[in-house]
Image 1 (cartoon, rainbow, N blue to C red):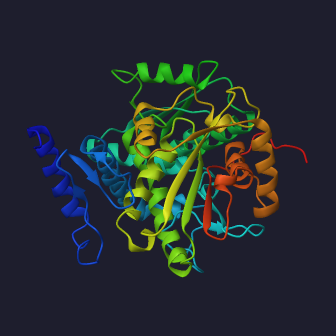
Image 2 (cartoon, rainbow, N blue to C red):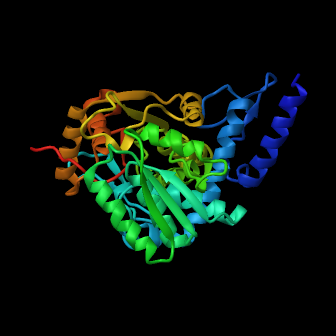
Image 3 (cartoon, helix red, strand yellow):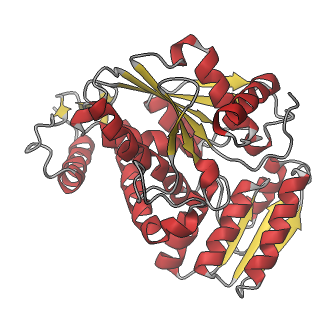
Length: 392
């Protein structure tokens, strides 16, 4: 018999489920099965998941759906190359490009956002949501590059009163130049934008910024633990769902889909995996497909090519998602990143950041993630703001 707490959770689950998937039964989609011990069996998700584990995923998923709504009117402004023709959906901020060299290898091109990095999504959604719900117009952020660019792009579009970016001293020179250039552009839009150089590492700068949340320099938008920032990154998962669905419909021989992503604080993969898992769980085209994810973390924080994910630890909420969805975290090195960066340059014709290169290395050098006739692999290209590129 379920406890009163479990019964309340089940009631919430049933209400949200009815709102999100009212036509599931009509479409011939299996319904979740609630067992007597409070465990849930859901198509596409780990069997025997507890209500306590499922509810946070469902909560994040509903936030991602809301983030998708927030982004919708701004997709063109957030995209470097708006997709309106060909086989790319116009609702996608970035393309899903197939490899020219390897069958069943795909690249989710987050280097094609307006700031050439996925962080445009989370920064925009975080700022937009806060401004809509609280009227706050004073923001603080910490970044070694890409999150700062995302915050400044959001400020350019949303026009808050003030934005301060805290930048640690180990930020790459090219990203510092880009940040300062964007600061000037945002000031021309009437936003009081500034940079504060503080700390020798990202974590030192972040610790200071967190300490300012109460009575400090503005609303702090953390790059990977703020729930609306994570939800914004999760819109990648919704786009992948929309982009992969027609491919799977045309390719019934595909039995497995693997998504490989870099991990710093974990917001990118936590949001993406939650969105794609939850959406796919209710779609018949994914019913016969084993959906897997792999995360890549730096083996050494002082790596040459990994500045985009140079973070000491994964945020607690994101780690919980990885554990719930059984997502492994693999270690990557400079050699792996350099190899993948060179390969992607040959395949895509564009330079990509080191952690993105590591996804390519992993996809082509680890047997369990290598594309095959029955396995489709997606490498998330998290960014293209390259500070140092390996020599051939």
